[in-house]
Length: 269
Image 1 (tube, helix red, strand yellow):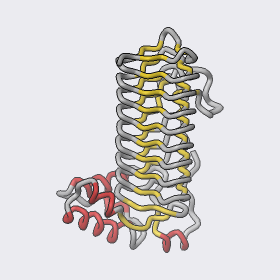
Image 2: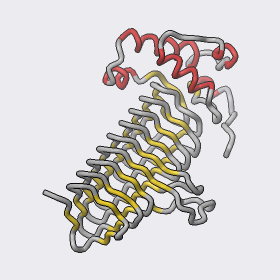
Image 3: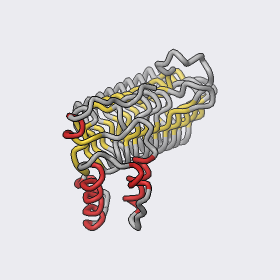
């Protein structure tokens, strides 16, 4: 079929278009940037400068990728937005580029960003993650591979969402959400994402081991960091959870009974 550009689209001469790219009506593409093979930009899509987009991405009407960050610290420095392959970026999604010179916002491959979701400056959204409608990520948030953020979720800046975690609709967090966890309310840890683990191909034995770890360490007594540091595991998933918790700067989501007994909030950045 070949690459096609609608006559009403505005494409800067420094924009590189791969094979079989389709640029729809009233799109605006600023350069330097590149759009990978087989990607489709429907009508009124806006692509800012210094965007690198992989192959077979689909951007729906009104999507904005690589625009200036909503950050008073941004002074016009050249910063980047990097998009992987086979992503579905729905209507009116906004993905802003990095703030500091040389920094970037990164979206991996095979993600689904539903209508109205926002990926702020310097965020990382890893492969296979799903952001449902109106999810809002503040700056420097990391969303792990395969994580699912349900509709209307709010995530504070610098928060990390672990791999295959699930955040229930309308929830919010200013604390890190460990891998494989389910969170709701205000950074309240509930249980593990058994359905997500099973769909991802984890064995029943691994799922039971992850659940046991959560019961004994994250859902019962207050977290004992020194004791956790001394643990070693044969199962890499347990090592992943332990390391995630120990590396946390903002603190970890707590179960409901611990939240009721403490008014402590994580530090502001």
